[in-house]
Structures are given as structure tokens and as C-alpha cells.
Length: 312
Ligand SMILES: Cc1cc2nc3c(=O)[nH]c(=O)nc-3n(C[C@H](O)[C@H](O)[C@H](O)COP(=O)(O)OP(=O)(O)OC[C@H]3O[C@@H](n4cnc5c(N)ncnc54)[C@H](O)[C@@H]3O)c2cc1C
Image 1: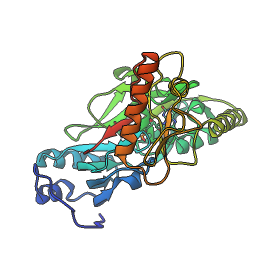
Image 2: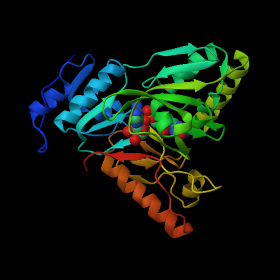
Image 3: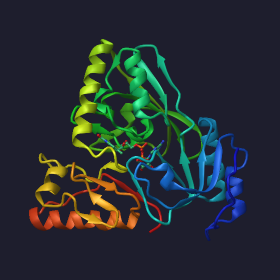
């Protein structure tokens, strides 16, 4: 266990020794006062009191039990559909960045630890000649985050391939949850409470060249239509209906609108980009402006896809 810096502050509801007790004996990495802008695709966000990167599912279980005993809340992130507010997150933030193993199982099943990035999972699937994840080409989130968000594109979504998930439940036990026990809907999945530490995906055999060609074509489409060279967190709003949110926002004349260093992308109006030093407060003000303007002009109420977390 590494400790990089001493805790910057102790929140009122728990003491520094409570925090030390919650992370005692973990085999993963523990970083006090971790700047979350370094762990999000937006490159925005204040510090976490403690960021923990558990070594494995057992480590996650130990952390959950100890944090519960100490009365400290846990938030899990992958970091690619997230806006962390400027004063960061109080309590424990968990990243599964050290839990990334991917393996094939019989019956064309792929098992990935929760922290494996979708690009890595897809690479494994393609290498094994397993089809069923091509729709996810270009989605940067973790496989666990993709289950929780039911990530998707117009080609498919996570619910199409999830067979089961491995969860650390709120008591710190490791349980398996079949897909039939998960209620998937548009960019949402209702799971038993807990931390997703592994995902089984049911795929099917196909020619590698065919999979590669589909992935390549979709990545090219993304490069042509999305602002991938600037920090962002994917789509900000859910599509309100047949007309995608990006088109509705563009029609409201908001492409290029800017507050501080936060800008509605001029390439894809449902992306907000960080031009360099954007604050979460800038992004939130811009998002409010977009929502207000669209509502005034079209009567449509846009719903957030982006998760906004932490202390204002
Ligand atoms: C360039 C770009 C393109 C994108 N394109 C798409 C797209 O086409 N389609 C799409 O759907 N999304 C897209 N996204 C958004 C994002 O990648 C997905 O929403 C993804 O599912 C988020 O995964 P994450 O691991 O980053 O989770 P986060 O964004 O960090 O978290 C999302 C939610 O899941 C929870 N969570 C995360 N991990 C766990 C876990 N292990 N256990 C329990 N809860 C957890 C978090 O607490 C949070 O509530 C894009 C993002 C970017 C930056």
C-alpha cells in the first residue's frame, strides 16, 4: 500500500483515524487528497479525501466492510461520464484501475474484471474472434461503468451482451448477479447495491476481419463527428426523442457557446469540451444555459446523461 501525501482535511462526520481504519491492511494503492481531475476524462474536479485502487475483489470487500464500520461513504468511478465538482468528493473514492484482467471462458463467454476499459475488452474479443461488442468501439469507460450506465450507441448497448456480473455487496460479500436480475433501460441499469467487480459477456464467434472492419468504420465515424482531441465526458444529455440531443442543441444555436473554458463543442453539440482550465462550475453553468435555451425554444426538457458528483 502506497501513501503519497497526508490527508488535507478531515470532514466533520469522521476523523482521520476513522479514515485510516477504513483503508487499513488493503493490498491496493491508497492516495490521500487525490486530485480527481487526474482521474476523469474531463480533466476537471477537486480532490477525493482518499482514493483507493483495490488489488482485487477481496480487497474491495475488505474496504467496504471497514468503510461501513467507520461510517465513511464510498463512491466508485471509472471517470468518463462524470463531472466532479470543484471541491471534490468527501469520503472514499474507489477506482478499479488495478483490476483489469480479461479472460475467455467456455461457450464464447468473455469475463472482464470491472476496471478493464472497454477498448481493452474489445481488443481481446476481436483477437479471439468473438463478436458482440463492436457497437462499443470508441467508448472509453470501464466495463463495470458500462454496465451501470447501460452504455450504448445506435448499433447496440451493454444489455445485449451482459450474461452476469460479479458484485461486492454492501456487506462486503462477493456475489454473482445474473443479467435477468438487472433492470436495464436507456443509459441506466438497476442492479443490487454494490460495486461491480467483474462482468461476464456472452459473445458469438465471427471472422476477425469482419469484426475489425466494423470497429474501424465506427472509430472513423466517431473521429469525424466527435471532439476527441479535447477533454470531455461524452454526451451530456440523453436523447429526448427521435431527434438526438446534439441536433436539438445545435438547432437552438448553441454550438460554440462558452462559459470560462467550458464550451459546447462546435463539432458535436451534445459534447462539452474543456478548453484547458474549465472549472466544474463553468460546465454546470453552461449545461444550465443549454437546458434553459432549448426549453425556451422547443419546449423540450433535456435530461442529463452526465453524472455530476461531489461538493460544489
Ligand atoms: C469520448 C467519449 C465518448 C463516449 N461515448 C459514449 C457512447 O457512445 N455511449 C455511451 O453510452 N457512453 C459514452 N461515453 C460515456 C462513458 O464512457 C460511458 O457512460 C461509460 O459507461 C462510463 O463508464 P465509467 O467507467 O467511466 O463510469 P463513470 O462515468 O465513472 O461512472 C458512471 C456511473 O457508474 C458508477 N460506477 C462506475 N463504476 C462502477 C462500479 N465498478 N460499480 C458500481 N458503480 C460504478 C459511478 O458511480 C457512476 O454513477 C463516452 C465518453 C467519452 C469521454
